[in-house]
Length: 334
Image: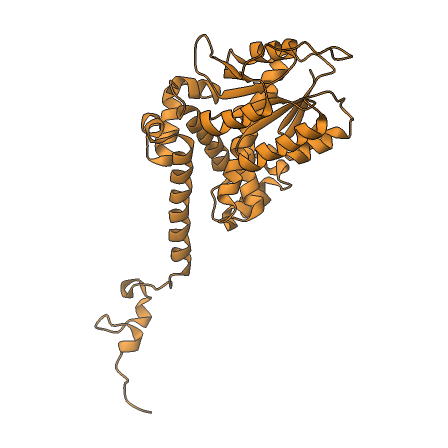
């Protein structure tokens, strides 16, 4: 169920939520994955010790997790230490205060992934208020979340945050329907979507989407889907300790070499060079700068006058000396 453009509800504390106080302390952690790549650095603000433990245990196999104890500490942590996403209690200390803090985080950090843990049900009107405040996903506190549901919610929020950042960067240059298509491709890259699914997501037929992208100076739908995978791969490559194998496995490439070839072909750089250059922002700039140059050349070619060389003119229009018709002698007057 969706409550906003990119906001998902993931059901996952038994009815009648009991609060078990978490230990005091400003920030605890970070807890890092025991092995493999950390996909993101997440901050958890959750006063219920059992809920906090459930969230942290579900996320640490794939993410680095730090726990904060108050909204002021969360704001400071995000601003000074940095976080890719936050899981926050939407009822602490009250719903109204939590909504105010969520709005502040969204305003100050538009690219931050935000997931709320809320004491609501699937049809609760409060979900609309949470979506309007800027959360990317909601975990329902009335049903215990499975670890897989928690991870799915957080990873969907992280993908949505990247898509939102991409759409904001493209909006000044490209029309809204085309930027929405590119953002959707990046957000759903892990799912390996089809062109038909991409077209349906933006309210177009595959042919209509191809025309829309071409008119905007963007590549074909299939290539836009490829770009979505490369942008997500670049976001992973920009993290410390990431390998090409990590990114290839995450994005569904058969081998690291397949990802390397696609990255080199589309950007001109290897994954190693992309990682050293900063990852996602670098690849975004490479892809759209190259596309802008291709579109400019294409427009110039279309506008250039179509003249035929003299040697290609029909023999009847060429003089004996091989001159063009305008250079032929006038001949005697009748």
